[in-house]
Every structure is written in structure tokens, then in C-alpha cells.
Length: 266
Ligand SMILES: [Fe+2]
Ligand SMILES: [Fe+2]
Image (tube, rainbow, N blue to C red):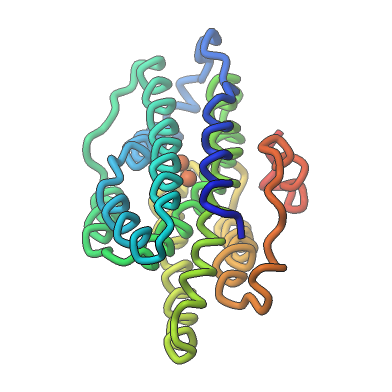
């Protein structure tokens, strides 16, 4: 488990990394635009949330566990998500496509988020969405030859790998703070939630996922892999301290990911 201070340092250092060459002009083809437009617009909207509800939940939680740095880490995490939204928005502007204000998936997720008041349900929701995001941005990257869009995706993929570790660590803490009976009851519910969201994300973006080289079967195989690396690990950690790897440099993520070829960041 990394301390909140370690995460603050990570987010601050990562913010200084400029991995996108904005002097490149978009070279996306009209055919590619046709396939990715709707998904790109929807995820751009989703990445631009103000995070107010999450901030409220994190404020209460940070007070309860007496760790004010956790709130600072969450604020930096939200800022990084907003960077993704800003970069995708800048790309949409660059190719003459509009930024949308409404999407059914985003509306649904925002409504669920409004019901979310506990840090645990927030962490669960974010962890699941981050897991689908990794597959989404890898598929988007595979679906285009445009170097600028590929760089934007690569930058997000590097950030998201750390987000997942950040949320998995917190989920482990939150899960083991529950009573044993609550843990036992939560495991199947959380698993259903994970795969339920995975299913929704597939149906909302299946054109893009297919263009990025996935089938329904391979997408779900990858989501299974993600589940065991994240939520399952958080809910079945026998030695919580020893189970967590040391914080690795940001670029090292690239060396870790080839274990599943389709999750490669290259
Ligand atoms: Fe993101
Ligand atoms: Fe993220």
C-alpha cells in the first residue's frame, strides 16, 4: 500500500510529463472517423466530470481515517482525468467534430454517482470504469493510424495503469475494513457489478471495440483478466501489505503490460 503522500508525488511528477506532440496534425481518415466518432465523443464527455460528488465522499472519508493527504491525492487524480477529457476534446475540435453535452451512458453513470455517497461504492465504480477504459483506449489506438490520436491514447493508457493501482489499493483497504459477513455478501455483488458494467460498455462501444481488433469473446476474456488483477485481488488479499508491489516509474508500465498482448502500450 502506497501512502497518500506517495500518490501525491506520483501525480505531481506525472503532470510534468508531456507525451503528446501537439504540433502533429490529425491524419484520421473519414472511414475511421465514422467508426470512432460516437464513442470518442461519449468518452470525452465522461472524462470531463467536475468530480464534485467524489470530492465530497473523499473529504468525509479522509476525515474519518485522519488522512488529509488522501483528499489531495483524489484531487490530483480528478485533474488527471480532466486532462484526458481536455485532450480528447482538443482532438475532436482539431478534426471538426463537436463535443457532445449528453450521452445515455454518461447520464446513467452520473445518476448512479449521485446515489453514491460512500467511498467504497465510489472506489468500486471508478475501478470498474477504469478497467473498461484500458480496453477502450487500446481499441481506439488500434483502430486508427493517426499518430496524434495514438499518442493521446498512449498517454491515457499510461495514466490509467496507475489509476487502477491507486483504486485497487484503496479498494483493498475499504474492503477489509468491513465485517467478515459483509465481505462475504459483497464479493458476488461486486463481481456482478463489474461484469454488468463491462457488458454495458461493450454494447455502447462495440463498433469501436471490433475496429480495434476485439470480438465479444476476446473482450470478455480481457475483462476477466482485469477482474482478477483488480477487484478479485482487492477482495481476496490474504497479506495486504506484502501483496502490493513497490511504486514503479511511470514509463515502466510499458514493460509490464505485454503479459497480455492486447493490453500492450507501444
Ligand atoms: Fe481517464
Ligand atoms: Fe482513470
